[in-house]
Length: 207
Image 1 (spheres, rainbow, N blue to C red):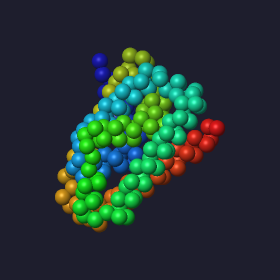
Image 2: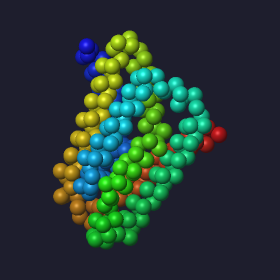
Image 3: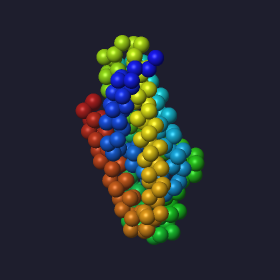
């Protein structure tokens, strides 16, 4: 049976970790504004979060916390990916015309899936938020009540990612101008680079 109070706390903890801007949110927002596989990307982000939250509540966070090698691999791999993606966004903003911004900003379904998985799974912060922190918070409850916490957190992820994608898609007609698209690329590219720098610092601290 679901405990309402614990479910609500799971939602609040999940929302507080998901809502701050990061690589996942920036990517969902960008796909939504471009109306390019936005629901697919949101769904994949949600499913990945749901699996990771379940693993965290199940106790998998200890494995990641104790493995510096795994954290280093994720940090360096994630930083390399985000630097490359950020460079693509910034280059598109610098050189793009209306036609090239629309064409280069689009993605095939396969590439959208691959990019979503990379943004999600190559970012150690995702594991910190979903697996380690939420796993630790849920540990304060009896085993029989941890499902309520996990369900609340998963619900927050569902509402946030689909809500963000729908909002971005709804605002898309007002955001399709060339200058706006260039600004979006600059913001997304800058966010990706800032996160990459943070990952590199984290990787260096592990050496």
